[in-house]
Image (cartoon, rainbow, N blue to C red; front, side):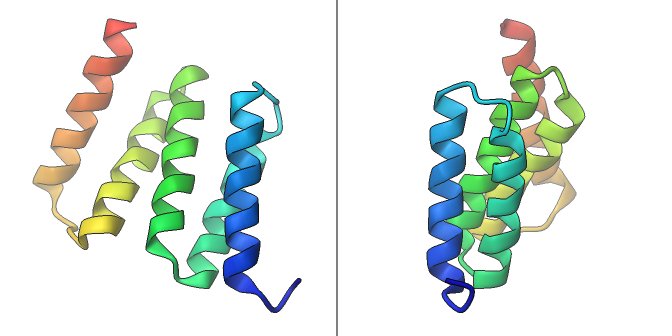
Length: 101
């Protein structure tokens, strides 16, 4: 199990998603483990999914700063972009979304 970095990342990210769907209080911890495993595996797609999970959990918990930070991650990871203008657009989208709720 310890040698299969990708398998561990996939399983942890999927477990976090299941816990999130069940409103399990451990979902955030497992999602963070998913981020760590996805980074070690070098899988940008899984990393984006795990960061999105953290953004959803953080928004639901009222921690908008963490949500903004986590939500900018998937876009930057998937596109390879790392510019402040993109981060500002993502931040604005999350703020508008959280206000609408």
